[in-house]
Structures are given as structure tokens and as C-alpha cells.
Image (cartoon, rainbow, N blue to C red; front, side):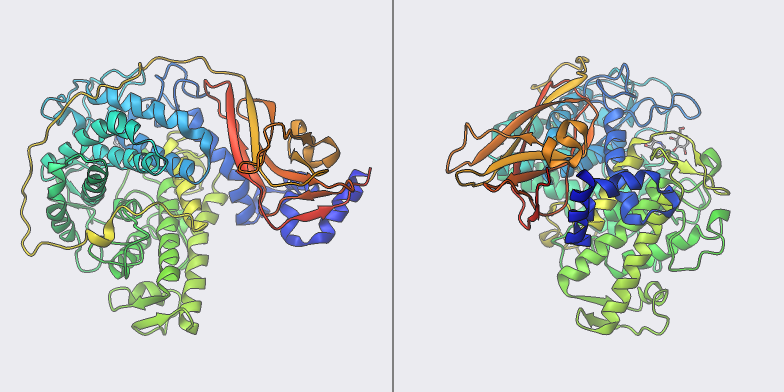
Length: 622
Ligand code: NOJ
Ligand code: NOJ
């Protein structure tokens, strides 16, 4: 009987295969290497999210002894020891989680708030970079997992951390404001953000270690994220009636940012204490983390992903790795290769990095999104070499989306972007875990295991691939470069954030009561059920689906709901099903919904959904 109902499904159409259990179980037997990229991304997505959650204190399975809200760079404790919390890695990770929360993963909220409270405490901690009274302590790159200062020599200070943290907190704050919770912003997030903005305004023109913790000088990534933070910080301050004196430095930082362009690529560093080629992944990271979907015309001043200088740089940086790694040998230009930090790198053997290879894909997905939005793309003399990899005879000019050249180029660039992700698929072990690097000769995983930042890079690259872009940070009105650059800085004000929660571990729960709520207007005799791919939800068999209750049903909120106890850590797919008066089941339309039961301290969680349109009917055969 069950099999017959599958056949009914299969007959309906190929686009529905994703929700058919037969196909799900077949996928288990498929060799990973033969999976399509889409299938890899679908199976890797919950693993990547769980990989992040595992590294967050205090409930993460790889975060034993880690204070509440802190995230370790990796659980690896030796060669390299990454069992510490870096301000940069944490902020980039939480920015990705905030965006995932805004995109609908509501159960990330307590995690985000724990992170915020933990950062408030870290800001006040005296450390080897200084303390909060003049802001210098905010430049400390990392802390111990129990929230105490790290006291060994290190490449300090690193001035990107406060800017990145401000960006993560601003993204969450803006969501709170648009959802009516300005008071949390005023009392909890703004005091933390304000300290970080003060730090950026005061010290942006001071020497810093780069994000790789090696080079002392000025780094493109650091300057780019600092500019962004002041622009969006200023907008947030205005929105909540606060002032940000330090934010006035933004145009000067932008002026300095322009000076990284060297004519055919972006200099990774300037005023640096080494003699390298300056070709550096930090440029691509700076570009993707300052992408603004509202920027107009592929703006060059802020190095937007689709700007000619950003594309020229993408080619120079990615090509620089073609000859240095033997796993890249023979792969032609215009096809993805493993990307490391910079070609001269020797750290842990100097290999391709998962996060670098995914960043190369992400810039291209961002560019594709933007061209589609603008309705045209431009080939300039600066970007010509980049485009010639896809069409050797292409000429400079503007190609509208109705032109064959536009179609040829954008289709090829989508394939190019995907080829980077296919390399990730190829070099990811069968358990789906991401290390920091993969061996330059044979692609085996190397260096730190389960690197939080690698997982976060997967989430952001896949979101960009899906056209789910982050909110604007204000580029459209913040791209005017002053005619003369000046290194002005502003003395900031620094106050200990008062609304803090203790950095104490909480007790992790093993089972969570998940209440699924769905809004769906029904008429008498209709009933709503919940079906999914786990046994508790009937393994997609409608006969075993969970009946929902309508006791709280009202016209303005036609609520159907039910509670299911699920083991913490369960990743599941589900859909709501309508059982009609005649006993037939109609699945809601669209893709299967996904949910991850957080391994956290909360024993209860609410999921709020709306019925998805485009249904299909499955006649009950029992
Ligand atoms: C040098 C590496 O290049 C840097 O990135 C790393 O964090 C430190 N050593 C500490 O291991
Ligand atoms: C070394 C990387 O170079 C640096 O960017 C990162 O913050 C740390 N590892 C921790 O992941």
C-alpha cells in the first residue's frame, strides 16, 4: 500500500520528487561522488548548520566547557589549537546565523541573544591589547573559551573584529526594530555596537594585523568591513535617536579603501611588513562581506561583487592558485580551482581552504544576482579578461538581459560559480564535515577540523546561490569619495554595556517539545496533519501523520497546531497535509520544509508556518 502511494506521487511530476520518501532513502545508497551538486547542497545544509551549533557554548557537542554564547573556531586543540573564541570568526558566523534567522529559522534566536550577552562581557575584559577605557582592548583577536583573556603572544591587535561584530549586531537590531522590539536594541545591542563603532572611528588609520594574523600594516578586508560598519551604524543610530560621532569617519575610510586598487587587482595589504605579491583571498572576502544588493550599477567605489575591478581581481586571485596547488593542475581558466589564503602561504602546508573556495563561488553568485536585478551587464576593458574566459571573442560594451551575449556569459558564470562548489563536494569527506584546509596534492582534509567559519561560508555561499541576499547596509547613499583623503580619526566614547547575562553554562536538554503551528483557513470537515521524513512524523506516510488541533482556531489566526517531542539535534523535513472530507490528503505545495531541533538549553520551541500554495493530491489508499 505504501509503495502504491509512492507511485501516485511519482506520477504527479518530477518537481515533486523531493518529498517522496522512496527517493530520500535511495539517496542514502547513492555514492556521494555521483550526487548532483544540488543533492550535495541539500544533504550538506543541515550538516553545516549543525556543525556550527556543535561549536557554540555551552550546549554544543564540541563545545564542552565553553561559556554560554561563545563559539570556538574549531574543536581541534592541538596543531593547531583552535579551541578559543575569535572575535572575527564568531562575528562572521553569527552574521550568517542572524541572516538565517531572518530568512525563517526562528529557533536560532536564543543562540543569537546568548552571543550578544557574551560579547558585552568580553568588551569589558582587560587584555594584552588594552582595555575598554580608551577602546584599545576591543582590538584583541581572541579569548579563552571560559570568557577570560588570552595571555600568550599573538598577532595583536586585529582591527576587523569590532567592525564585524557591529555588523552582526546591527543586522539583528534592524530585524528587532522592524518587529517592534526597539527596547532590546536601545538597552542591549546599541551599547555594544556603539563601543565597536567608536573603536573603528578612532583606530581605523592605525596599523593592524590582518585577518590571517600575520601581516602588520593595512589590510583590504579590514578597511572594507570598517567602512561598512560605520555606514550602517550611523543609520541605526539615527533610527533609534542615538548619535554616532565616530561614524563621520566613513567617507575617509572609503577614500583610503580606493587606494588598494593597483590597476589590475586589489592589493591585499598596504604598508605591510612583508614582500608578497599582494594577491590575497582577503580581497574576495572583503567584497562578499560588503555586498549590498541595493548598490546601483555594480559600483566600483565600494568594490561591489559585479564591479569590473572586483571581477578583474577575482580572476587574478583565483588564477594565482592554479599553478601553486597540484590538485588544480590541468583545470582551465574559467573553471573553479581550490583557493587558499594567498599563493605564498605555508601555514599548515599552505593549502586550499574550504572557506576560500566557497568565497570565490559566493562573489560570482552575488554578481549574477545583481546583473539579473539590474537587467544588464557591462564588459569593460578592466573586466574583459575575466569575461574572455567564458567567451574569447566578447567585446567591451553593455549587454542587456535580452541579448544573447548576456545569456551566454551569465549561464557560463553560473557554471563557473558552481564548479567551485563542486570542488567542495569532491573534497568533503562522507560525513560532511569541513576542516580548515584540504591537501594541495591529494585534497584530503587538513589542519583544524570542523572549522566553524568553513560551515558559515557554506551557509552564505548557498544562500547567495539561492538568491537569498542579505539586507542592504546603505551603500546606495554612502559611496561618495572625498576629493582629498585624510587620516582623520575621532576619539570615541566607551562605556561598559550594562545589560549582561552571566557567561555561565546552562544545562543542555536531550529532548525538545516542538510545537508546530500553521495558519491555514479551512472549512468544516477538513483537518490538517503534519507529515515528515522521521518516524515521529510518520516517515512521509500520511496514515501515520500527526493530527493537528484546531482548538485555538480563529478567523484572524486560523491556527492548527500540535506538539511533538523530538531528540535534540534531529534534522528533519516536513510538510503540512490537508485531509479533506472525502478522506483524501493534499500536501501543501513548494519545497519540503526543514527544521533542526537545536541542541540547546530550551526544552520547548514554537515553529510558526503558513500553508504553502501549489498543492498536490494524494489519494489515501488504506
Ligand atoms: C600563523 C597563521 O598563519 C595564522 O593564521 C594562525 O592563526 C597563527 N599562526 C596561529 O596558529
Ligand atoms: C587562522 C586564520 O588565519 C584566522 O583568520 C582565523 O581567525 C583563525 N585561524 C581561527 O579560525
